[in-house]
Image (cartoon, rainbow, N blue to C red; front, side, top):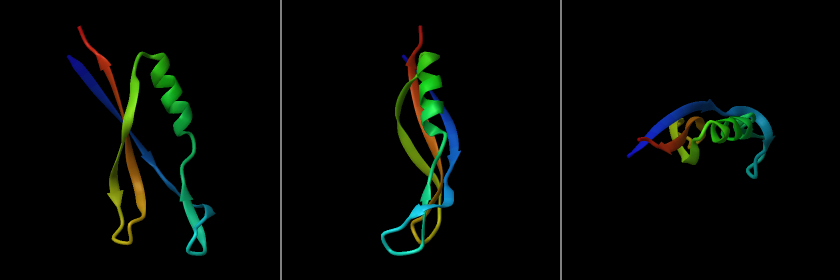
Length: 70
């Protein structure tokens, strides 16, 4: 059987350049979270947008981790 854990992560507005002009949206710190969870026995399996604007901009995601249970 598997168990899952979710870590909510917010994007940062104005942290890059957008192809459409102006500022882009980025994330920071997520790699450290994934590495730490891996050390704790979790496997990163993906992400799911949890807060998105009508324009399509993703403001918040859940990082999804899984591991085997006994």
